[in-house]
Image 1 (cartoon, helix red, strand yellow):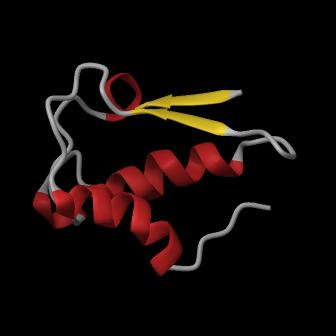
Image 2 (cartoon, rainbow, N blue to C red; image 1 turned 180 degrees about the vertical axis):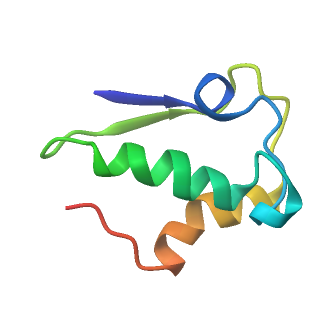
Length: 78
C-alpha cells in the first residue's frame, strides 16, 4: 500500500488555494504531490493519505483545491 504523509511529504503548513497564494497551496499539492503519487500506483493499489502528522490544520480552500480539484478538472487514475 502506498502512503502520502502531507506533513512530511508536502508541507507542515499547507494553506491557500492557488500557486499565487504562496508555497504549500492546494493547487501545488494537487499538481505536484497528490496527482504524481496517484499516477505512480500499481493496478488496484490503494493510497493512504496521512493528514495529522505534524500539520496543525487545513483551510477549506486548501482541501477543496487539493482534493475536490482532482474531480473538478477530470483527473482519473487508470
